Image (cartoon, rainbow, N blue to C red; front, side, top):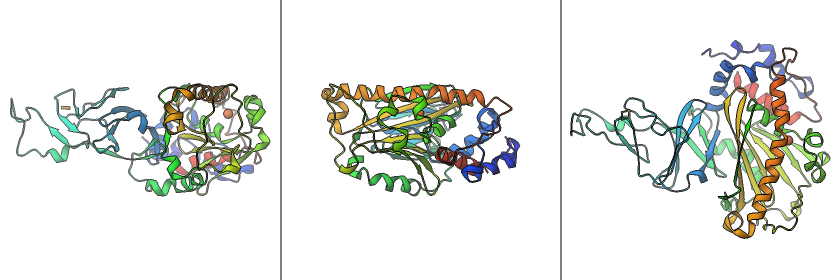
Length: 394
Ligand code: FES
Ligand SMILES: [Fe+2]
């Protein structure tokens, strides 16, 4: 694999992305349709960064384990004996068998046993059994060090239920990385409220397959320019004029806020608000894309995260996760109708975006398109994401 981005795109094509919004262009077509480029990008934009690969609530009990295919790299997510989330490379140290099958979920396991020769690992990744390693019924060999054959761990951190990993181990520590967004959101939601967010069992998850590159959902999420044309219903109560860009410093996230989030749920019991949410901001909401792959939305009464799983240059899975404050709103029958209505509202909004993001994917096969241009009034946040990509590639 060539280790230089300029094997895939011209230097001038990336340099121009870094200009000010009005004089810049977008990323070139190769960044959306070239599968060799995608392998290069996997390293720079995912393995070198803090990337979301799932939720802690999806492995809610000690010993729960699930596999995750990180763009071809097999991983497994584990809740260990001390209730901590751990992420390991999903491969046996003996002869390299994949330990947990693709899409496999295991419940309340005490250990991880390899299906090939039955070597076993505890939930902390230690190799604890090597049956017949020294010949029939001889399960130990003095010269063999079990310690050197533990599972290989991946740096992982849980924030707002999202499991972030840094595969390369080179990223800055997670607390430092998340500090700009965490400080921003602590003004909306105190830490004790954040600790009380719950992922419902019903109406808590939506999976959407999008026939486009993973970058399109992100850059589309950053801007409200398309609100009147693509989301006419949303635009009735949360108008384009009520939205404002959010640009981070340093450039690790971008998005928009609204000052008029006020959907009408008729004849449905509505939940109470997050106790710490500012009383003068009850119609305020923020929609932030945290690079590379998660889109977050925060409101007075719910929070959602839509994390992206790139499958190929032209296929991405959106995993939408919904959260409410406390057990009663998240799990009680009293609020089931609200959970359903709220989930359906957001699903509808995300589905409305499909025609645009899939249409842009088709457009990237046109040799006449050279990255396009940005409106400095309307596209600045989307441009910030392009800029982050360009800066991270070189
Ligand atoms: S490959 Fe796992 S025990 Fe042999
Ligand atoms: Fe949209």
